[in-house]
Amino acid sequence: MLRKLRLSGILLILGLIVEALSLCWNNAFSFMSFVVIGGLLFASGILLFLYSLVSSKTSSLNN
Amino acid sequence: MIGPQTLVFLLIGASILLIVVVVIRPSITASREGKIVAFLALFVVPVVVAGLGASEHMERSEQTQFCLSCHIMEPYGRSLYVDDPAYIPAAHFQNHRIPADKACYTCHTDYAMFGTIHAKLEGLHHVYVYWFGTPMNPIRLYQPYNNRECLHCHSGARSFEESPTHTAMMGELKSNKVSCATSGCHDTFHNVDQLGHVKFWKPTE
Image (tube, rainbow over all chains, first blue to last red; front, side, top):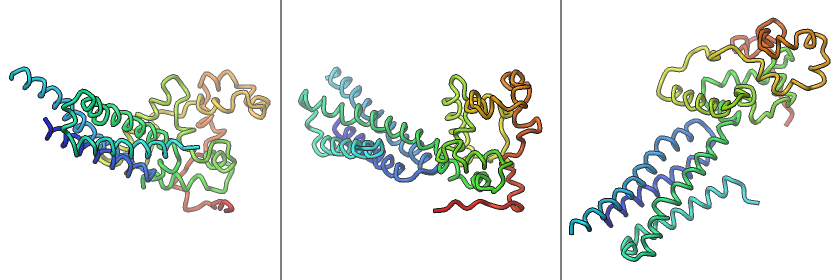
């Protein structure tokens, strides 16, 4: 679970960095970077965090 | 006063710091308080910050500078500086009849229910086609220009209402039976294929 939390955090930090960089410019490229790259990193980070919650619950129930 | 962009940057910084705490010491999640911190750091705060970022990007996408950042729009941007009052977009832009920093959006959004959402969705589609598809060349409107967009500002304006030509056909104009744009009265728009033969206005710095 801890490994998943770490990875989720790293993905979210990368997503936030992409968001910060994309806000430095006002053009279609920065918008697309935010939507595609940032969106992907945010989504995977959050989903991984949620998955870590669910999987830890499942493993503690099994134990 | 902190602007919205500064606020987003501050929140991004705070969010990163919070996440770093969890990444460096994930063992804090063993306690109840640690679980709450992790939930805030890895879910609530990133969702809020991403939402604010998306909102800021949406706000910026209304700006003329944003529309003109696509190469294909460059001649349309130049057409705003044509030194000829017959060019409707140029006359509106140069005389600040529309906000110069939101020129494209002001005229090319539907002033109807969900018009803003519709315009944003179309804008997203345009950006997608520009990057991943083949944009139509020359660019055309999806449908004929609706008088509603002109009347949004002109309706009720003295110079418009008192014009005998407008008064005579007000009903047709409001019901969109006679087009402001294509009935021969105000029919010079961007005309980008003519830009090689026109004079340009240079704004004073």
